[in-house]
Length: 105
Image 1 (cartoon, one colour):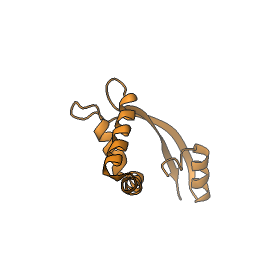
Image 2 (cartoon, one colour; image 1 turned 120 degrees about the vertical axis):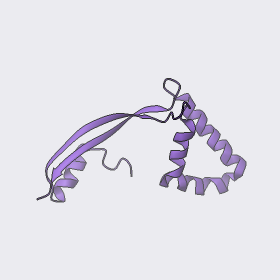
Image 3 (tube, one colour; image 1 turned 180 degrees about the horizontal axis):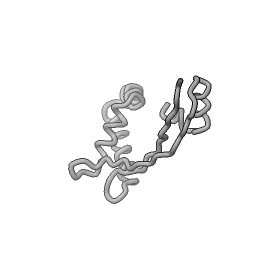
Image 4 (tube, helix red, strand yellow; image 1 turned 90 degrees about the vertical axis):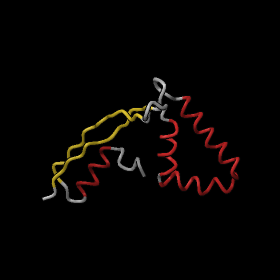
């Protein structure tokens, strides 16, 4: 999953065991800003989540169980959660990643 390589030590072990050497792992942080065209980013973030593999699976499972109005209520609740956590009027958060370099000779 998306957090499968979150532990730098585990990531290093996987690469070394696969034959890579000179492994360096550096943290890289960046701002995710979903505010496009002057909007607050709520619909953009929700669309990104729902269009991913996990979001599609959730929709496929829940929409038939909840019915059209129940699914719409769940989406409205998700929008409310996003709005409750906005930063400076928009959906923004710091993302964390690794910059990994290695050699395989």
